[in-house]
Length: 145
Image 1 (tube, rainbow, N blue to C red):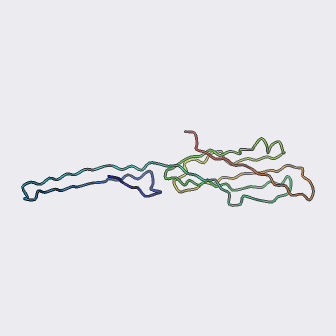
Image 2 (tube, rainbow, N blue to C red):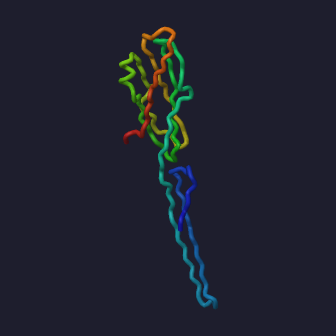
Image 3 (spheres, rainbow, N blue to C red):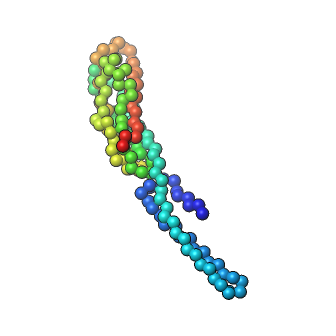
């Protein structure tokens, strides 16, 4: 027997499957009845997505800006994440300061989101009348348990 669990079923759910079988001879001389039960648990799976509702902002040199960073748990079980700036050293060499309001998003429920703030202070120097883009790589991964 195969039991198919619907996609996105919570890993906290447990089910009981009962199978009953009845058999009888053609002459009704004997009858056999059997019942079997199985406890079904849902295996957890982990999928997450990191996003910013406003991923691009235009600012003047040395003006601080704050970004919202969203961690979405698309898995079927609660999970926790570590968040970091992947290119922190490169940004610092350019005179940028980038900090996160927290380096962890703890206990994010299945199909839930947590938000944090990223504060960015660009370099104090720039070239007049020249627009320059700077990419900030925000990285998230499973929290080391």
